[in-house]
Length: 405
Image (cartoon, rainbow, N blue to C red; front, side, top):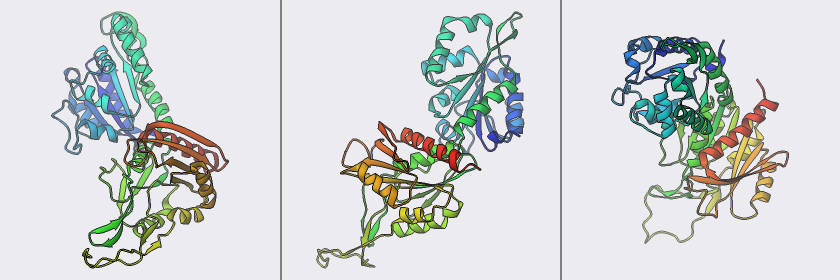
């Protein structure tokens, strides 16, 4: 029961309303369905329900302010935001709706909500007149426009003694809506995605090497988004300055040969392989075991080809989805189509690395996604994480059509 919730990281935000007592039942239901639940309480919420109640139900320390962050969340609200798959605010008072709509961050919960990139589901609960107030309705409309989801409120007996619209919906209704959102955003649950990222370095001697300008940002973005969509992610990474994505297994490598070994040894466990790394095509034929002084150095370095990892993966593809990246400067679509066919790929992402505003080292990318059927999807300049999301949409569609479990 509730497989969508299995291992899903759900953050429940509880704010200061009488309906806070219902949030205890909500947390219990999420946990019963296999979710990993963290509870954040506003200061006013603790006046209605003690944090110990939620700690007992979730099995985790409850966050009540900016200075009560559990030790495992080393970067406070940012770390928890990176780990979450879904955020549910129940009850969502007029106060938290107004603060989030206005971008106010004056406690842990309101700050956390600004940091998350996953779906937010709010369950409003307040007096009928408050709910109907233009400021509240404008806030809800603004948040809906930004992609925040709402469930309820319902009509019924309110704490103020009247009957009207403003009652928080029952926990099971919230659970059903949360499951719908997880179904949309955890479409890679149960899959293993193998991603490569960054450059490789091919040593000339102990202090010099051949490499390229890849920062690894595109591959790291893919790994991060795939994990948020429920996948088990293995990231084989060349040398970068990036922080490892939360919840991702990182396998550090340096050379193309090391990357090849890391990829091929893990190929059998992968459902999807996305080769975003910029692997050096060549390596020095001879490597000196000691530093070569400039007086003794030859001006001619003889090179030999590195193995084509992507072609090897394509040859051994089986039922896997294999996605390649092609960094080109000329005839990028023609080159991409040729590589897609030659290397037996399902998709290839082509970008023009001759530009300085996108691609290597940039936060943005502008690419074309080419499919086996010949279709081309041009993506305008956008953040690399957005490119990753669109690419994984295509991957998920491929899995649904031809490789359903």
